[in-house]
Length: 301
Ligand code: SF4
Image 1 (cartoon, rainbow, N blue to C red):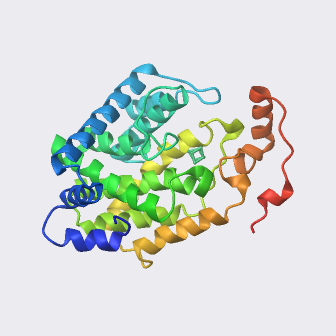
Image 2 (cartoon, rainbow, N blue to C red; image 1 turned 120 degrees about the vertical axis):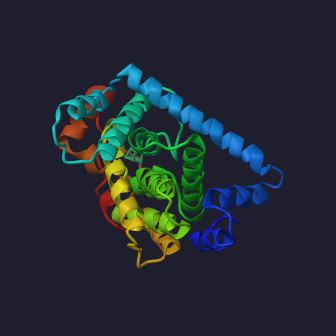
């Protein structure tokens, strides 16, 4: 069963590239889907994702709480002579903000792995393609690698904010995107996996606290910011930095932390930023009275 990075690396050591290894593994487990069919299905997802980027950038959407931050980054990219972030980070952030805002405005996106974290992976994949150039097959391979990382996070822990907090959504998306970037740069399977672990370690415990229960604040900006962390985690992995804690154990720790999170920090919109005075008044203005916060819900068990 596709459940561990350790087995992924063992399989990848048998000579196939990481994306081919993952397709073969999935084909064996699915009990009938051929590698060709699976590759075509992923190519279709990649095309859907690309369409969501195009539509999101044309739409210039706003949410109920947020503005068109993707366009702000676009203007900044044109004006700033020497932005602090590099071209990939800024472009990936711009795409991520636009796609996540498009989701908030009910646009059609590819959940990767969830709707709340839908901007991170397209930001990194298509930002990379635009800044560095990548042929379609390589980009597809990177999406497959990202999918393999997400599958293992899902099977060992969770991808749901309601179960594991935002570490399970935006954190998982960042880990998937990091592995995809390492793959695009020609890094080893081991570097892909450790890059994913490095990112997840840095967001361990990230809570889910959507203001007014809308997937806008802090969700959309987290999408933008996680692209920057993913780029740096990928560079660290490519430089040879490795996680001291084995990647499978990092995922297990993430699952354990998620299970230990009080309910207030798991998509109930009753803790964290959602429970700030401003968060409460925004909720009151949008959806009515704020229910009283049960003090026990914010205590660690
Ligand atoms: S804060 Fe919660 S709803 Fe928002 S992206 Fe993170 S997990 Fe999803």
